[in-house]
Image (cartoon, rainbow, N blue to C red; front, top):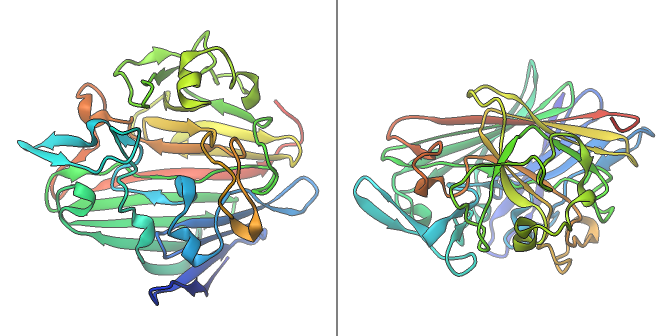
Length: 357
């Protein structure tokens, strides 16, 4: 196991940006930056023994400030959408910026945490090497109440898993609902369309949403619909189906209600690419996951090594509380009481699988 610190670059405003690279005994490698705590690369072995970087991203410090689609960012305080760009808490209304569909707040923007230099600490430990990024989020930051202390720990294990541990506390009741917005393509970040890869999601239901991507508040079964991934299937099979939910989002961009939710980490999804032979499994202790097929990536932005990322060149498994749960009191809440700890873990694990199940 090893951790290496290096300089990624210097921003126009003079801030130095660091890169932290974790490597295990198999040569599996993951790198991150203290600019936003962003996940930059994930190199794993393919079936021919070559290394493939399976996450989309940016490799220039200045470009991270304008990272389209939030590639690799740990999004907070709230990931996904809050309808009406505001919420009531403790008898007070908190107004957020409108930055989505003319009505919603998306990913707590536009003052995203990606533009901030996070404190960083790292070490080799018995079960893997890790880097911890921490951030002070002051009262009123992004419109949310409470002075908050936030930490995101990335641990690369010897069995080729990346564990992401989110922790946060605040001195007032507030909202915490974080995720990592990594985009995966198991044939490699620059390999183009990813819709022929196979996905399984352990969810018998999902939360259908309106034309502006706010859930109606209903939980509906996936059986008999294109939203059914309970049996592994090629993403492309149903993505263009004549189904209103897919038309609204131009593909998959929905929250799945994950089975077997009890607060413990369990297997919730997997993906597989026949070309590379790489399989990725997803584990989380959360109740929801947004599966998104990069429908709105337009190819204009220059990513790492000059790559351009178009629609459906990747997909996301964004583990989180259900979108807009602040307005659905019957759903699990994203409100964390003053002094209590927000604490959640998601794990992505890679292995070789030589043929489809």
